[in-house]
Length: 452
Ligand SMILES: Cc1cc2nc3c(=O)[nH]c(=O)nc-3n(C[C@H](O)[C@H](O)[C@H](O)COP(=O)(O)OP(=O)(O)OC[C@H]3O[C@@H](n4cnc5c(N)ncnc54)[C@H](O)[C@@H]3O)c2cc1C
Image 1 (cartoon, rainbow, N blue to C red):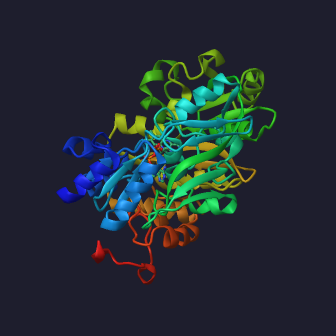
Image 2 (image 1 turned 60 degrees about the vertical axis):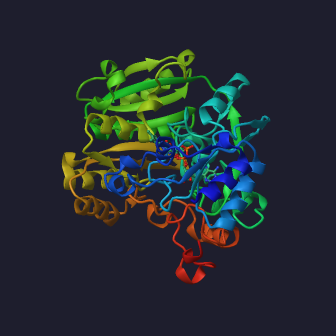
Image 3 (image 1 turned 90 degrees about the vertical axis):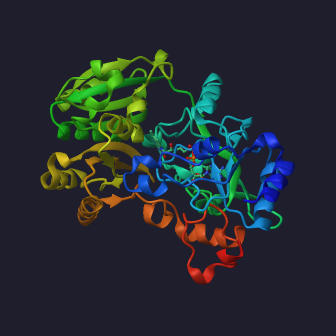
């Protein structure tokens, strides 16, 4: 950016909302891309020219109009906890940090309407004070924003009951386009698919309406097993038992639990572990299931301690990978979808092929009504070639992979690409929204990058 643009931008939003210092810009240009040994060297030096932190929708619109006129790329940021470099600007420009767009606008029995920068942890706390709670949230909920989850996440705690983002967990979005005069769209119904997990490539979401549910007293329980097969079969049985209300059903193969230092003293050495959030009063049902599979009830966190201490969800979803990386930075991970019924056979094939080179971690969820074993396996990174050999093997036995080692939406495997492209064509005619994340077929680009 030139000094003239900087001055114009400062006049537009106010100097206090514009950050230009190297360290601040560098920090706010990064997310958790370093989870991937493939992405780390490629994204380490990428940074924006400026950070803008708007406080109103009007300021968002004026920055978008400014970017359109000057041909400046805009990458949106919530809290920057995404794992695939989604929030890292590949071509410089402005990072639009929405964390100050953080008003809770309306809470009813059925839904919450919030600005996109509201943190999920703050919203959950507010809802629980009113006898309600979120339906689904990522394990990063204390930091992550509602907009960042919708535009960069997929599922998490609660997905065992409510599914992922595409299962009706977003009701409405206010979307700004990047045009000469940005339009304010209200999107609902099937059209939302174009904006869920869009990395902000075809519109900027400033407001969201999400469904909520009634508050439950959640107990947290660790159940341990001598072998991983018993652990995942137990988890599947609990996940499928509709008489047990639940928010989290995780199975983790030993030695992954040995990475969980803060709760290490509560875990049995050598045991595979299942981490559960179930409704208070389901202890006996859990014990019955555990007995059937030779499991032992271990560490229990009573419901009055929920969200007050380090919780079991701090070791699940992609937090499991974080503890692994903290212990051994040469480890990495995959995101995999196993067959809902045939998964034990697929697990057997993987263990036969890779042994301890691949350690399994399952998050059971309910998607479109079916219990699905989603997985975030941990593996040692040796070479790029070996990583993709392992991915190819998973795919060859029918295990779907959402590749976490790419920033390209098409390659990652989440989201509805055709719908996203269609929205991008109309909402972002100069291809300035998070360029490089959604590949536009050359013939469809309206204005080439040479005009920027
Ligand atoms: C330890 C760890 C655990 C995790 N666990 C989970 C998990 O359980 N489930 C899960 O789904 N993810 C998980 N993630 C990934 C990530 O934390 C979540 O997806 C989180 O919700 C992202 O929110 P954020 O505010 O940090 O978004 P950001 O990282 O800031 O943004 C995510 C993407 O959305 C875009 N974006 C952000 N806000 C907007 C907006 N308002 N409009 C348009 N585009 C926008 C950004 O450009 C970026 O492409 C995990 C990550 C880590 C590091």
